[in-house]
Image 1 (tube, rainbow, N blue to C red):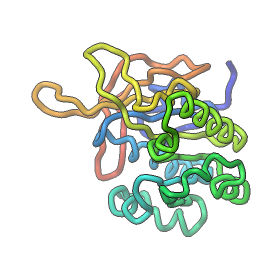
Image 2: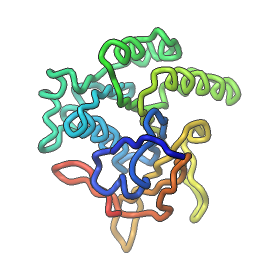
Image 3: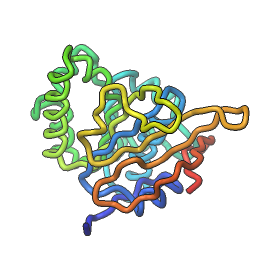
Length: 228
């Protein structure tokens, strides 16, 4: 497939992806707590704005804009400057309002339309998943969410928690949303030679010839990087 590629801005990640993400695609970034999912996702927006002049929207559901500033304002990111220039927009979505996310006329859709948003991050999918009590109901809800995202035509990353898996088995997110999207970036935070290390791999990326191996993922004072 001859798709326009979106560069992530995360050193080494585009090489792992086979050049970048397909424009307008929807990908899940999954892994356990501490693996660096949110850092990778926010860096995708920050560098998109700084390097490629592509406005980004960070939808924060689990935490808040203020905690994001405290925890992820890495050297050179200048979150306040990007926000002031409308190149990066933070949207705190209260958990009690997440049902509105299913609507095409939600606050997310309005911001995307009016601000020319090209990159979108949803962090995370868990509060949306909790809207549904049954698995089949949740799947229908996820399909509706994905349908709305495709209408917005943004290049999107969805942050998801991950269930532990047996050694060598294919991992899976807590609610299985990776089955419904275009791409799946899997991260882990496991003991390797008696110390805990972050690693990353691309499990699925439709229409792309991506690398299949799991490689080290680092977080420094400047943000995330991949040893591809």
